[in-house]
Length: 386
Ligand code: NAD
Ligand code: MG
Picture 1 (cartoon, protein in one colour):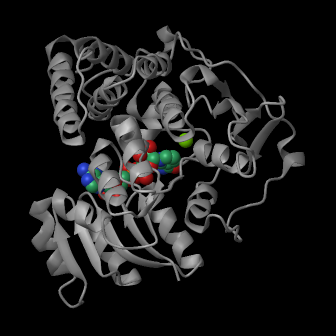
Picture 2 (cartoon, protein in one colour; picture 1 turned 90 degrees about the horizontal axis):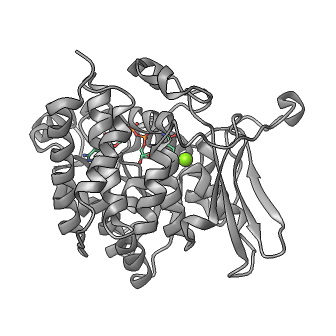
């Protein structure tokens, strides 16, 4: 029976991962969440892990009280989260949102644990540092992000070096087809109404700005060792083709399926096995057709900002990511408008362009500085709501 440590268990990916683990009788030995201790305690009662950890230290005693009649060990804080990620197990699934996931990714890799990675921000923020650590520790990173899982699946059985190009598909998000002028007054509710996927709030906003696709370009460069110029982003509104690869002989192999994260989550956990997955089958006849379009990078500027950050390399992708995290948090709090998100990402990239930092703690400190910069910048003139 596989033993799994699940980080970010109360979120969208976390709760779906639990469903997959229950279906296949995988044993969850560790669970963690940011602050939702009620759900965390409920999950702990159901799954009986050895340890549960809450990121917020001030919630430790409340969580202990909720689990007082069990023998589950309760821990709290950032260090305890890293200890949990380093627990010996078959797979650590990192489903935390944001760059807070980076130290956990590094801890799992440092301990030699196979890493199923949903937390794309850790790869964007840690970049080559994460990939080098994985190589050094001979750790496999199994993608959970649907596009990267698709690419990974397409490459199974392909000779090394046969990958020429990645076709990274995008749904286009809720504002596909709209122009800049139409986006000045969009509300948080508008941005959270994704047409095909039900996800956490932050990634849903990232899908609306196309930042998510930008982060995924960076993620793909690292995971599959390609340059941004080898990646073509194609809008595929129905979210049926999850991505494709073009090989040396111009064969194109795509992975298709209904838009349900349980498929890539399960593949990362069962790899290299294929098992029955509790999702609807793909019905192509009912679907009728699959459409393709070019992304509108004039309106949705975050995609090109990320591609440029990756071309320039170093800390810039992480800076873009940190700036975006702060900007999205401010957008969700009603403090800035939708279009300001890209402006703030660009301003942070200009401000922090020339630094070289080669350690994860050093980068994390810088990213916190980037977040403060964005916060102050927005407070001093970018606010268009209120
Ligand atoms: P979510 O907001 O629904 O859940 C995030 C989880 O992380 C929660 O359990 C939360 O308690 C925990 N968390 C938040 N802040 C934390 C912190 N500082 N320290 C520790 N834990 C913290 O997010 P989600 O939609 O499940 O996304 C999780 C990750 O997976 C993101 O990186 C996202 O980009 C990626 N992803 C999500 C989907 C999807 O369908 N939701 C698809 C592809 C990739
Ligand atoms: Mg994705």
